[in-house]
Image (cartoon, rainbow, N blue to C red; front, side):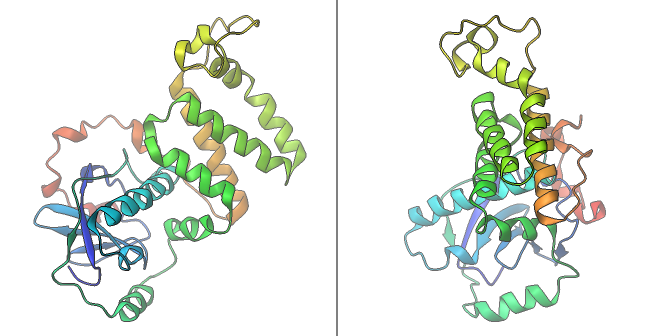
Length: 260
């Protein structure tokens, strides 16, 4: 593996669902963007990034890589590319095959792209839009296991975002989320996880299920991204709910390129 200064092994690497779409495969590297890579070596996967190359201390590398991978998990989640979040496995190690000529490596990646992937499109948008950055960060922390407290924050961002762009859409969002809000706010619905410790309102007889809440928030985030970036996301494909028992699959024998 070459071109990156640091490598950090990834756990949950078997959950790389459909990452081959829009990406370039080489013998030992899944090119995710000119800035990120997941490298395959000896049946292990390693996360690497040029954004770590200016660091020398391994703990600082691990901390920054963890934040980067959290954002990346959020992007992959919204694009329906992973079954569950990717996790850093251990402290980083220096890549002995590191090639310092970063400009040539980036040029190579760009020249071999057939098109800019949706992953890269959204990633590049994060630095331009603080609201989208926060949505991606919140959803990337727990991926498919995001709970009501984080989902509620995402809902508030969604509602406020539409208020600045389309007031009718904002009103619709507010109306559509009544059941969601009442569930998230009421202690008789969520117990100690509710946003409020006490409520004078009656609890819902049938509060919103967490799965329904996750799907709703995710769908509306995807719609917002489609609107802002003029892209299309396959919103029907939800890999986090497929019934395969991933933990029992020997992923070393699976050719992920066939999923392209």
